Image (cartoon, rainbow, N blue to C red; front, side, top):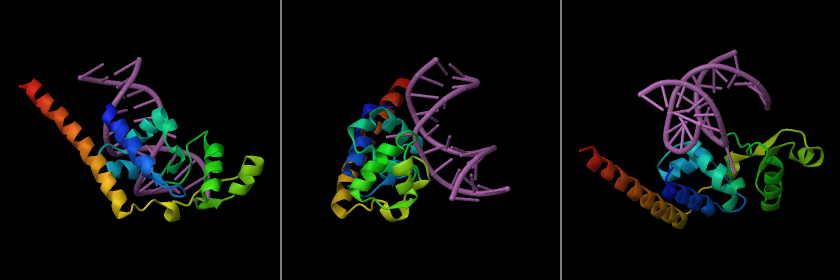
Length: 138
DNA sequence: ATTCTGACTTGCT
DNA sequence: AAGCAAGCCAGAA
């Protein structure tokens, strides 16, 4: 995975406002490159540098092992939640999830502009690569 | 080149 | 609502 890709992913995640969230697949789509698993891979290795809790599974579940920490952020940011999160906070069990239907980030016009810049920059570096490959294969 | 693996998704019980 | 199988994308062995 190219470092440009990692940078692009982190840049996008950094744009997500407090209180909202997106799924891994959403980030891939905004980026116009790769798939959900690629985003997951980037987050697992570099997520510590950004608000990682704002990126989750499509089901709204926080990444395994980080539910407890993530919940603290959600409560602090007022992120919409569904289920027994209160019980989970007290006793450690109970099922809950982020209400993605409500919390999903809807980028403003200016945010869209920023996303475009990121996506195009990435696109450019990827294209440069394929050109190099073509040259080599001749 | 082939196979395995993973902070994923979707569709079907 | 929760569990499972298959599909998917890339990097690593």
